[in-house]
Image (cartoon, rainbow, N blue to C red; front, side, top):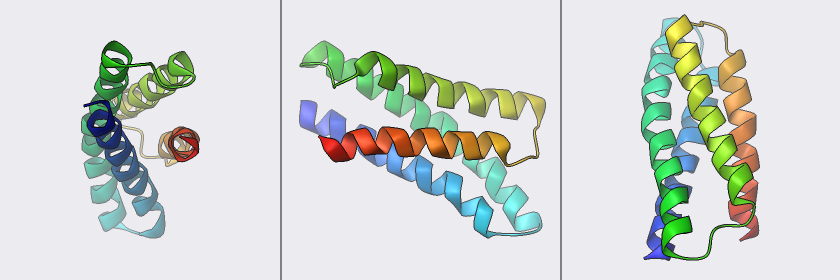
Length: 111
């Protein structure tokens, strides 16, 4: 059970990270459309990430550095919500989320 939840969290984080990186390689209107889709993806994957971390903590031994990991995932989700609420067109919130996602992925790689 714990393995499946960890795998779901890892997949959600990997998909989110890929979605965050994709608009940076595109230009024009397609990049803007992809950025909007990335926000939706961020909501879904961020929620999965947080729920998976909490489920892992409740079912089995908590992941290493659980409070930091949960805080980073919540921060990433808050950045998505803030960027969506402010209708930020800049790539800065996405870049911050991308860096935080890489930090979280590094923890999964070490496990």
